[in-house]
Image (cartoon, rainbow, N blue to C red; front, side, top):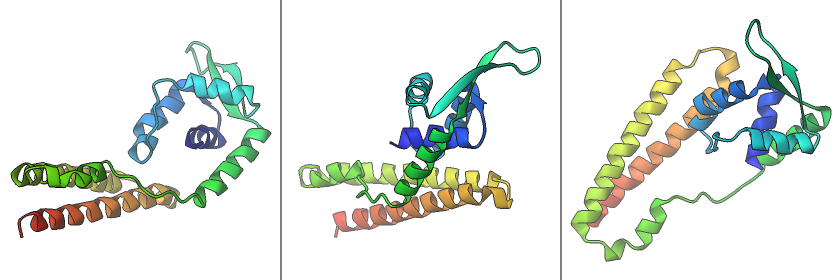
Length: 173
C-alpha cells in the first residue's frame, strides 16, 4: 500500500511527531502523490498495531508533550520490501479525460474545443507551477530525488499538452 510506504519512509528518515508528518505530506509529498493527510493518526495506529511503528511521549523545549513516532526494525524491513516492490509495480495509467474522450462524439464540437482549450490553460498553469517548484529546490545532491520527480511530472504534463493541442487541431480538420 502506498500509504504505508509513505509513512514508513518518512519515519525511516527519522522519528517525527504527527504535525511534522502532516507538514511533509502537505508541503512535499502532495506535489507528486495523492494522499489524504486529514487523518494521519489512523494509519499510524494501524502501523503501530502491526509492530511497524512505535510511539513515545516527547517534548521539545517548553512545548507540550507530543507523541513521537519511530519506525521499528520490522517496519524498516517492511519499508524496504514495499519500496523495492514499488519500483517494479507497473500499472497502466488512468486519466480522467479518457472517459470524456470516449463520449466525445456526443459532444458538440464547439463545446469540446472550448473545454479542451480550458484544459490546455490549466495544464500550462500546472507546468509553470512545476517549473517554479523545480527552480525553488536547492541544487544540492541531497535534492536529486525531488528534482527527478518534478522532471518526470514536467514531461508527463508536456506530453498531455502536446496531445491536447493535437486533439483540438483534429476536431476541426
